[in-house]
Length: 290
Image 1 (tube, rainbow, N blue to C red):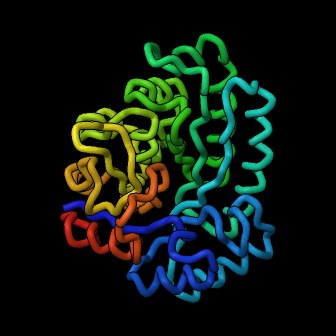
Image 2: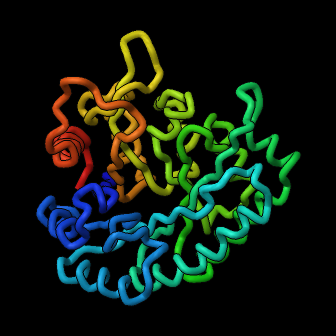
């Protein structure tokens, strides 16, 4: 039976990097996902000395880096080719840092497209009006592949060009890098764009998924609009149905817990120890989690 292991964005454990790594060990986590809070910096901002210091701390606790989560390509497509292509310079620095940290995956981001229309595919519009878009992504993916890593492209929140399932399919087919790149599917990010998560959506995205992000989130009764930041055990989307399928299908060997940051704080809700509660909920409720 396929198994998956858990990790979380490292800064969720603590804003102090060394303390965060200790908590990873104490919570029984093997894998680390590095995005921010690394000696006060984002991962792509580290110099090589800081990266070496982080790697030594990780090694000393018997941990491994699963993903380096950069901010590369957080940009609106309408800002133009030069603006998006400028992110490749940041990516080059991130790759140098990743050479020290030795992750399995390096995260890129699906760009925003604020002018998207709800009655058409954002990717179809981008293909027609911004044909250079895919060449920039191919360049980024190829840079990562040249250093022996796999690029994983995450759908972002709100104005992301990837919202409807058909946009994910159209994008990855257009990208045409099946070995070098896959999808980090952030369920709540997609929900924040107006698409309520479902097992059917998972099945459509399954061929592209390399990495799965889970967050809580709750809507009001009778609504599917994301409203509240809550724990996974109180989430309105089908957490267990989808996560059990992800594990059973073996599409995401490591599953990453994220903060449920797109909903508002709910008055009177218990937010104490939310990270540990979410980890325990997943371990106690999902078959096949190692």
